Length: 389
Image (cartoon, rainbow, N blue to C red; front, side, top):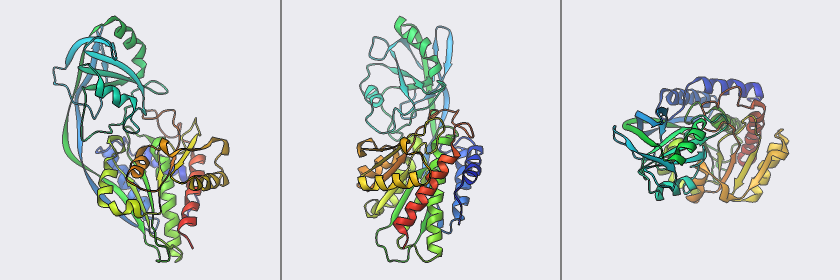
């Protein structure tokens, strides 16, 4: 039986961090997915790679020229591209008079559909938008592309928040600018990782577990905590199965394409549609589980008793009680939000991350290994209680 210690967590998180940038369709995505698949096979569950076809974005040029300064950026991946010639005009505050509107948003501005950034993009009068992403350190922290398959609105260029004062100043002056956000897409492939442990038939409803495994950069604190807790859940199921004590099937999925409208989950839900409502509970291991600097943990579910039971397990395994918050289901985000919308019974865990979507989200500085170990132990105990005899 694996002991879910901080040392065990540390070697897993370090390996994930070292596998490179984990943006879907990149070499780091494929390398980290293969590594994670290998780790999952140690559980005794049946492990399967589930291909996911994608359109990979290749950026040609992405920059804003303002007052003789060129600011490099990144296209918003669900906005249209400009032509190579770009868009020229006056810079203004969003909603003002000018061809290029300027706005500031946090990196979680598109965690679900319908948020203010989406509303701005759908209603803007501007020919293009430039958005400064605000996060600790004010680096470029890309915003998720919830509508990756259906780009909308004007071209949007994202730039690092460190430029906010400069851009605010020149938006107020209606300074002439040129914006280029040119990209193309090519067919590519990523994959989900599935692990299934079949029960002995004494329980009827299966358990399902899901966590995303890709992100904009290394995304280490954002993704690694959920992935480590996912492994703990699968190891617990495998141990019960080996002892003949697993009463129901346990399905676990680590999905790709979180940053691009949950592409991996979309494919999974097409393939496993009956499981959405059949599963007794979907345990959603969301973002930032065990990030350093902010220990806030949010538990959201369709059933308050499930939230309270998970809270008690987390406290028993050493997670600091004052930082655990049971929140309304309306606040659920990410893949948990999608599953709830489709009728699944979801129990979702999500944390906090001062470097959310930033390149500075790295091991070891932004990761709390002891916190992740507590979460992993609590999740393993949850599996034992839900699926064991």
